[in-house]
Length: 265
Image (tube, rainbow, N blue to C red; front, side, top):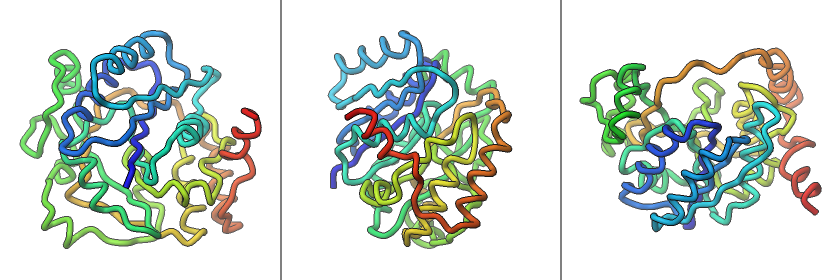
């Protein structure tokens, strides 16, 4: 199964460097890595170009003009460029456990999407990691919140991973799905601008189309670098779009991947 790893990023090359380094150290590498760049400046491009020259990873830089927070559109652009049968989404501030890709492959199951978890790295330890270029985190690392989410055990995963069709804990920073299932609902909704809810609305339409949620526990682990929270100024509008999808049981959005295809033609 060909797997595409998509990383969303915006103007934090120091963090992105650690993320890509953690990808290089995976026990199983993704077939391609696509950087979904929401309009970063040339520093991010320079970093990506350097990795392209000095890494065996296949890396694609998917850049869009910076006219505000547009994570949904940025992911759609990356999905359009992807060639993998299976897609894993992460953010450009999440350091991956060395078995992260291997675990997602193990969890992949037709008719399901996978929601993973994360451990949060403290501000102090984030600063240390950025300075020392540290990517080796585990349950025993200091400065972790949600520490239980950093336990890696295939045995515990087989016992506690489950299917639950609800929106609690939905996070696109650790999510995986089959590309055909994503295209079947027209991808992410480009109407979302500003932080929040685009991932939950995407999942609502996935589940309304018949795709079930599978929670990955005790594997597919990532460690989230500390940063200031994004502004929530668009949350009221974004909640309206989400609630509309829930109330009307939508499994399609009008302004999704197909809109980008039409604009490109």
